[in-house]
Image 1 (cartoon, rainbow, N blue to C red):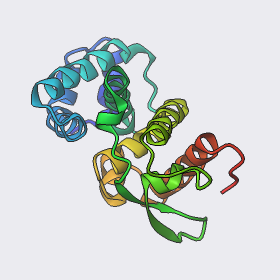
Image 2: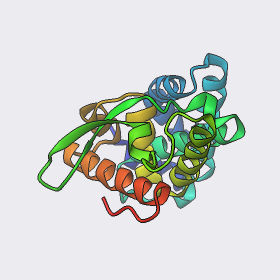
Image 3: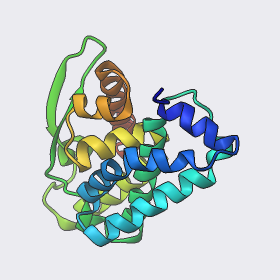
Length: 199
């Protein structure tokens, strides 16, 4: 009988560490593609993939199958990618002109916006480089403050360009859940980047 990812991880945390090799077989290529899509560097992606599984293995005893294993391992990978972003110049990594779609309300209405539109303060000159740099810094800090599950969907949707259905499949949850998380994440980012915003 084929054990689920969660069953394998619980077995691993209970001492059957060999079961972790099965998990790696299932996820190594997927995590490698995901990380490479974000960092755009093969060697760095390999290093971060290895570190992802190393951290997962080290955390095996604290793992609880309350959420899908896929979401757990992707959050580890996402946080490692974001750590790399923080080490480098955020202005060279973050595209302020990248379009993405997010849910506007609970009815499911959606709108496509550009990242710079979401975080721009219309009262300031939009094209000045100093303002763009300030926007990047505010965005970096805001994303860092998000919970892991919300940061993960932001990274997967905005930085890798994955569609909601693809994210839902990778994280083993519903499309509705992904839309809800994106809506909350975008709303939170806007409130943090533009103090006084309520939308």
